[in-house]
Image (cartoon, rainbow, N blue to C red; front, side, top):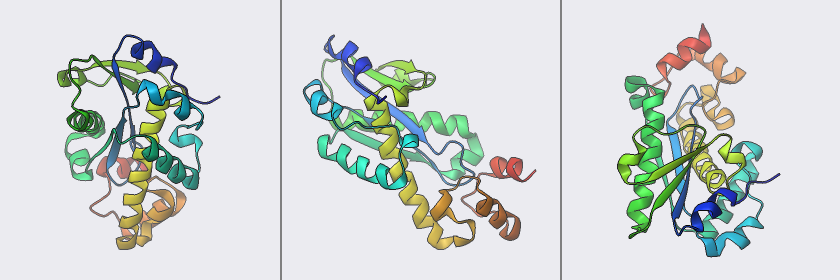
Length: 212
């Protein structure tokens, strides 16, 4: 089973603009949280459906990169945002998650500048607090990244962007093997933490729990 445009079509039929959003990196021990927002249009649906896009968790790293390139070939209506480790440590992961999603949606709206259209934002999982302050209506879909192409695509572009960033950090901090684990709590990452302690990109509360 692949995600499709079933949810999008419900609102396209009502002449609404539909945006899919998703975040990645919430469970990592290090690094920022990223969010993607993307907008496809009804006239693009048939050719995009044939691409058989999956959510980022169902793809290998190589497949994610190729899928992200394909997505970019079919739309320029996207935005990727991030919230730093500093903010996560100061205000918590829930706050950072919410703000990353809002930033992505706001950035996309600034880019496409929709006029006189109702905007529907498809959200993976649970509603995003205060998202309606952006002038949108959100629709939360449990396991939305496996059901909606828009959400799945948002997850892919956000994941590739975050992975790329974590690989650049690996050059500075190779002892944590971020090139392999992208900041998640793998055996090599935990071994690096025990031997070298944490660095400025680690999430304080997360590593405390992981090492307890």
